[in-house]
Image (cartoon, rainbow, N blue to C red; front, side, top):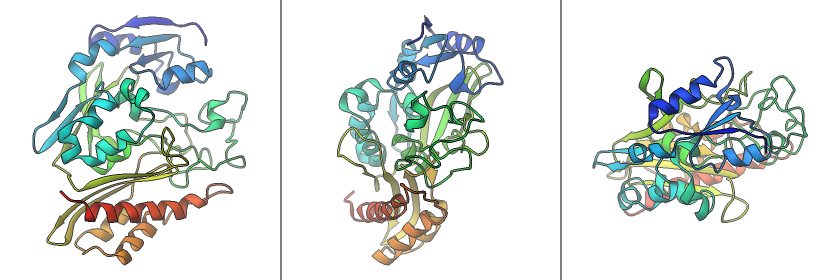
Length: 338
């Protein structure tokens, strides 16, 4: 690991100033010379691999007293960005009213990591693409813009089939983000100009021609909270993976339904493990609204969710797998007791 300076932020203003001072406005945040440190479960790994090389690390854990609240109020939910994944997953009201959130956190990583990792850090985690994480490979557009993408013709079993470009097919690795995007979450961002909010769906950027720019955050900005309107007790997160613990998704689905008298009044479907960003399957959702659920409908929805998927040599199986995961998640959501 390369040498770096360490600063401990005493308040949000200090954290923002420290991060802004070292950040160049024309550089992607992931290459900024200063990086925030919370749980550290991603940043430290990437620094050890020499993928991220910050000259300064700003410890934001002292902000936890203000940024780690878990606040359900009956018709809405607010989660501080520094809340621990394990605390949120175990919270009784979240398990009752937002099981898709609890499940997405419970099925992520190991118990030890969930005890350390924060919600804000989780949604900002970077791809597990082996060509990105191994600096001996020169051609990675996400790490070395303009160098090419070794995964295109390389080993791409874990890579994306949705949201890809001719510059990058790296998969977004998180689970919690799928629950957030399915529930129309809003993200609160703290920066030099104060606090702003935007739909969580606008936080991550598809690779397009600039895969090195992964989010819409500006230099010095930090995620401070997430909020969700309404309750979603009929919701599930289903994750298919190579082993049953401590493994990233081959395909996952976050499904939330509002069912009244057997009719689906509202439906949310998000996909994980198969896309370059947290992926909302809006065309699939449209097929569900106003319908009564049956297996034929589940299959139509599942196929619609992957209508634009593009498989490659090793990852084409994800399309069929993803359809099965969506259909099964729908079945579980419809039949769950609430």
